[in-house]
Image: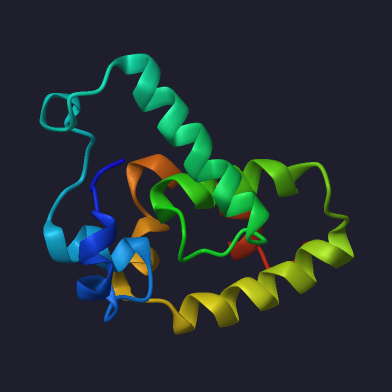
Length: 125
């Protein structure tokens, strides 16, 4: 809900691979309800729709702002991973992080995700 892309302008965004890249390029970091003329309830439903789309697309990191998707994934994984699976996930995740842009890499140490990835740093899981 940070930006609005009219259908007729969709081709102008073809050069971007993720919502994080678009957020970085536009410099917008929060919802401006006045600019979009939406109520708090409409904003809530917009966020629900975005999360539903993200889930329906197999949690593709490019669809949802990483400031939101990374904390959600870590909460889901907390109770699901055995020690062995945590190690496999850590290896996979570190490979993925290497391929992501600086915005996502930096998000691992921001306020929203602070301490969420301690289990990945501990190699003796």
